[in-house]
Image (cartoon, rainbow, N blue to C red; front, side, top):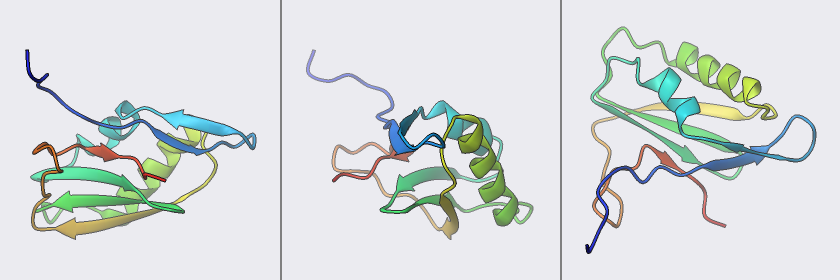
Length: 108
């Protein structure tokens, strides 16, 4: 076997409400973003924020509400408050391996 097919979503480490770190599993984002009427989505961790890309969203997609639902989900998972930026894009490009991961952790 030369490769394993499937998703390559990352687990994101964020500052926790208790001062430590908390690991956020991709399912936290799936629960919110899989409900959107859009072609695709991707969460990218940046230095002090999360950028949510929404490819070709339907006119009904309420970006501020999406950001708020993600912040609520992160709070329930134990994360400290973080900026969530929601951005419309035409498409989401594949990564170096040719896959389009839905959750991309920052590489430090």
